[in-house]
Image (tube, rainbow, N blue to C red; front, side):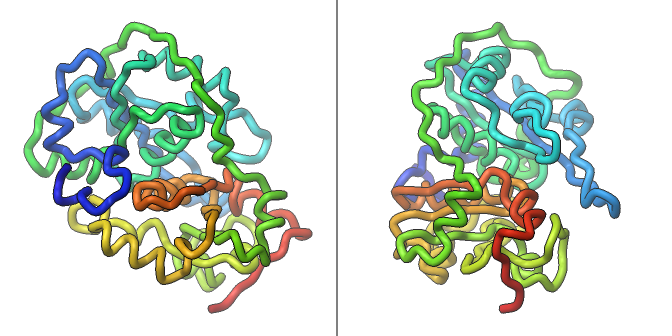
Length: 296
């Protein structure tokens, strides 16, 4: 257990660069870059561009690239990045060579939310042998560790079995029912400006889900290293909004990505019941029947 993860209840879901370096060459190891770049677009908010081009310029040895939208998202007429069915998820993981005894490490080249999203889906479908690389590719490269270029080397397919559907994704009905429920903390992972409605990317109506609190995913990260803050600092952020005083937390954001970073850390800190609102503000803010708030 490293100093960075020593204060977590579940440190096994985060892996340090040195520990990953020691695993390179293990035939059970599956490493994935799942970066997506969000490019602002005035007409539709943003364009989601897979980070494959950057991957081919440099990646962790043996890594493969996951196109999150194409490979691990359910088709939807309006919403991006929705959870695929158990059958579709298992088939995709099998194509990438992930089996029951695999050790999966997921990273991104930007913020860890892309990696945490894939980790959350694996966890949802009963797979606990996955960890997010703390600091991602930025930290790996900054430390001078080995880098490969070019397309990924394919792995033999494997048989991925969905061991359980833990139902970790919440829908709008569950989120609506949580408003005013003292047993549930609804937690926004977007920026403070987006939470209050004073700025930032808008997915529909401005503001937040009524009665929700705010722990921005961006604030969980050390901006210099790209790694998560120490466990005590992270716990203080969630304690400040009462997340651990409630039996259940539902995290949300714009489209279920940043919210997965908050969900990862809440789980690692030992919260027993964390859910993620998959459609998040992309759905909620575009339905005028669903209550929202603005301001502090």
